[in-house]
Image (cartoon, rainbow over all chains, first blue to last red; front, side, top):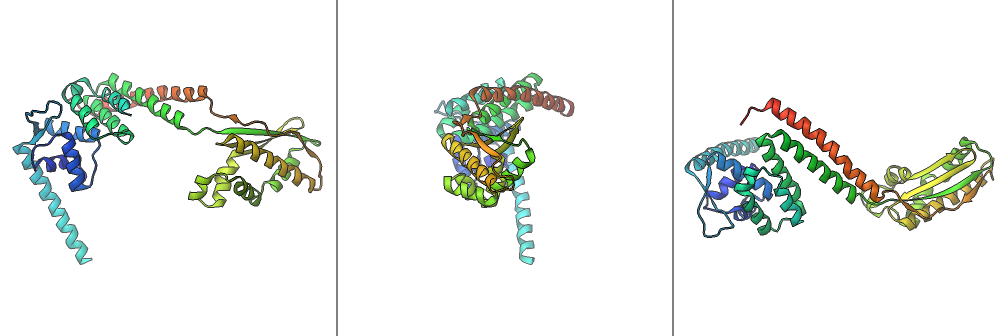
Length: 96
Length: 234
């Protein structure tokens, strides 16, 4: 799983985060370091599609984001697809 | 490097910078971004410009990118030094010169030079000696006839002193090989290996950087035309 938008959604599924917190979280759970340009490209696309949105914060410099209901729906759908692929792949590997 | 990254943020479209510019700047500070993120941020800026599909901006970004890439390549390109010795040929026959040079600069002779002067330590670490000789050293060694009766032996290397020493060694081997050929004694030293000269001058590096401008312009125009033809308006 290396699609930056999916990684950002998976990170925000845990709770609101700003850019650097997402970057660190994604590196921890996926072992992938998203570059700053890649991360903000994903954030831009996700916000345009209404899957994430900015939330108010006391920290004026760091803008946290929150996953929206439609973002959660999209993430669940994508993860279910991935899950199907993983299960199929693993069972075929066992048979081989 | 931080200045370069801040400069790269300016390559994003204005609407994007107004919305996310400050956030990206803070992220670059927080994450301790360095040279590894230059390409990532530049690619992000390009992607946003292409998304906006502005002909002028795409061309401008490509021109800037072309100059940055060419400039980086030009100034990171390792310096090389050339040292040249001159031979005098009593019989100006290029065939004799070629035969003698072949006899002198054999694989064994070049391997011995590489070992004696400890040349190409990096290359020897990653490729066999035969490849170092054939793919690296022979490409940096020239024996060139200069009509009517001279020949130049040139060796190019990253260290000027080594370049001069090796050039002198090569000449010595050619003269020695010449003595043991049937027409021996026809080649003599005319001028010893000179002090090695830089092959890439500051002017050459600036010229290389300048080449990035037309290359970026051409690439940008082609890219913008392709995007304009293929993509529907936003």
